[in-house]
Amino acid sequence: MQMNSKKRFITIQNILGMLPYLFILAMFILHLILPAKTFSKEEKRYLAQWPVFHMEDVLDGIYGTKVETYFSDQFPFRNFWIHIQKSSVPLNIYKDTGDPKYRSEIWIPVE
Amino acid sequence: MVFSSLFFTFAFLPVTIILYYSLGKNLRNIVLLIASLFFYAWGEPVYVLLMCGSIIINYCIGILLGRDDIIRGKRKYYLIISLVFNLGCLGYFKYSGMIISTVAPLLPIGISFYTFQTLSYVIDVYRKKIRPQRSLILFALYITMFPQLVAGPIVNYADIESQLSDRIITVKEFHLGMRGFLCGLAKKVLLANNIGMLWSEVKAIPSIEISASMAWAGIIAFAFQIYFDFSGYSDMAIGLGKIFGFRFKGNFLYPYISQSISEFWRRWHISLGSWFKEYVYIPLGGSRVGKGKLIRNLFVVWFLTGLWHGASWNFVLWGLYFGILILIEKLFLHKSMEGLPKVVRHIYSLLFIVIGWVFFEFTTLTDIFGFLQTMFGGGVNIILQVQEIAKLKSYAILYVICTVAALPLPMKLALSFKKVHYNIYELAVKVYYCILIFLLTGYMVNSTYNPFIYFRF
Image 1 (cartoon, rainbow over the protein chains, first blue to last red):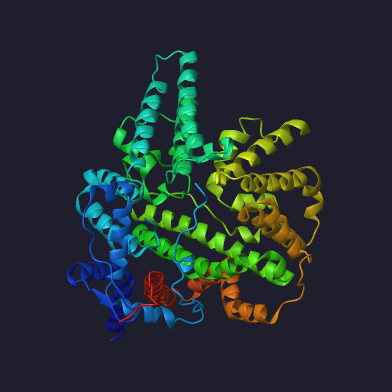
Image 2 (cartoon, rainbow over the protein chains, first blue to last red):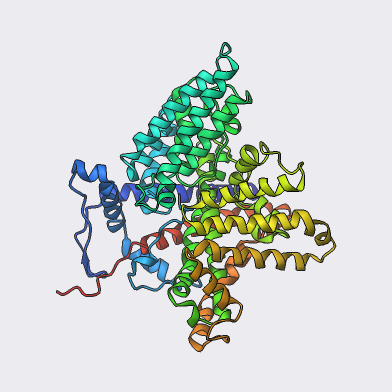
């Protein structure tokens, strides 16, 4: 009996340990298989679509930025994640103004 | 591509890990090299050629320097060629605008970091401390490895020489690497970005209009922002390195608990400090010289440390500010400080570190001294205003979280708890990382949430 509960505890631990990796992988796969949306009611705007390939864009580095925007706009269950963020207390001081200065950009010492 | 983007965490990273572990041991270095070149080219498609050129030139110079039949004079000649090329590129792209007051060319990302890595390699081969790397692939991997390519830490070739060709990867190390990455991401996304918003608001107001207390609250917010941003990036880089079997040295060690400015610099951006110590300070004679030479050596190192951070004179001023403080500590304060209570030493260190961030953050002398004046009561408003109190109240919890997170105490408590309740600790850690990845996803998605307010149906 005790052996069984110990085994169960280890199994739960192992599953929990793997969960972050499985989650990342699941989001990636879902991203690939879910159809792209065109419009967001919540944000009242059209969402980015997979960018058309132009060599000039690639050389300018714009193509990468467009792909990243597409990836973010089409992220699976986007509205759910926004809800998770907004309901997270006490870090929820994020003002929802859409101001670009609040966008996530890493600080790197000026090269 | 930045580590804190959805694309990196949910596309680039899983694809790279899957390819790395599924294609077999022999192809791992190739996979990592291609991934690193792709990562760099993503943001710098043209400058990837400059980096490749630098790799080939320094690889050849390394081989030439390592030849047994080479005469002594020629070795020096090859070293000089390498120094001129590497520092020339860095100088041209980073500092030309500053030196000759012209429009500087676009700055290739990571150039400060990969130039210093390359220099450490060439100088160490010249000193016969290491053997030159015969494999171009391994040498290129050392320079381009994506975890530390853009913002460090600066990895000395000697430290990872053996790991490049053969490294042991265990499941435990992989877990630790992933956890390190998530912790770094949390520092960046949850702490640095949020506390940074307060600083953005304070900075946007003319310094004369804010109260002295608000100026202090603002610059302390910036001190937290820069620490969690940069140490978070280093943690992510070190964690990613571990995922692929590399062991990089730590780059930040709770710098805000320092009891002197010298200690602060032994805890802050350790890899840069070590680099300047090994390749500039010690070759100049280090500390074991007369007072005059010591002043010169410290001046050179701190001038360069400041300048390295950015092509602007305020960074030089910031570097020299610390150089002077360290010189004062070395010459006068060192012994008398030992007798002081810990709390006094902490207050002294934090006070000067925080003042130092003013020099780092503002680019003009007018702004720097304007803000310092406000901090010390020279502004129009000395007492906190009503709206400032409201603002600080909304950030109070975040200040507490940031303070606790900048201390080693939580880690110490967790480890002592682990000794007594191992199973509960292990379970709690796993639950913690599950919650963390959920929260991080929410915050990363929200950073791209862009409601179009004026949309008309």
